[in-house]
Amino acid sequence: MCLQRTFKRLIGVTALVLSLTACSDMSATQQRALTGTTGGAAGGALIGAIAGNAGMGAAIGAGAGLAGGMLYDYHKKGEAAAYQRGVQEGQR
Image 1 (tube, helix red, strand yellow):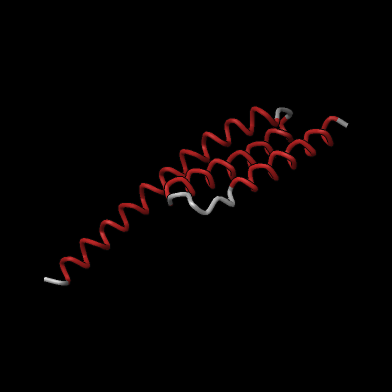
Image 2 (cartoon, rainbow, N blue to C red):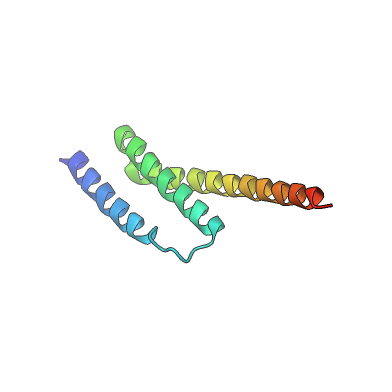
């Protein structure tokens, strides 16, 4: 019974979070941070539910997902900057 209630809560929270991700006026950084956070929270909640504490798993997963999203954003910005430098060098 408790596991079923946990999954119902998880589904409700996931539906709420997914409705927020539909915001199209976000910057690329905001989108990557939100995607990482929601993905990490969902994965963490699932693992936490199996281990016995979905809330703690979601919190840890959200933090790890946010860090991953921000690292990915940093990588993509560096990639774009390198591309622009290459374009400028090619135009000389």
